[in-house]
Image (cartoon, rainbow, N blue to C red; front, top):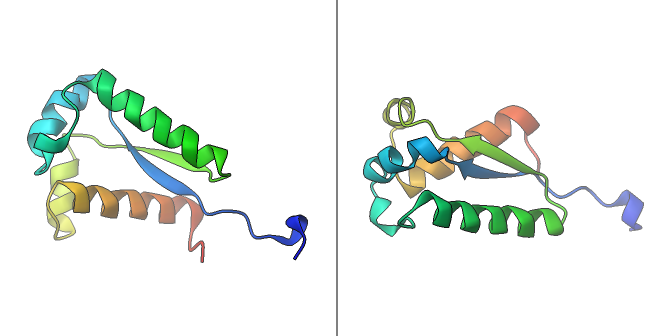
Length: 102
């Protein structure tokens, strides 16, 4: 298969947090104790991850987590507002935008 015939890499979702929302989300997430202490620390990690994914050729979709709506979304989808809830939320957003990438 030549490079021009290769299927593009799938889009990857990354949860994104606004600085003002960070304290509320850390309290909300059931794994908040594993989050970086500050938004600045979190942002550095998130941007490095995004840069790495893009360097491999993945389109990266930033998916904002809103502390006002995320708990209700999690409850409606039978999950908790933590790592699993974020994964499900991101996966749904990527699917809605890009469809089935298989």
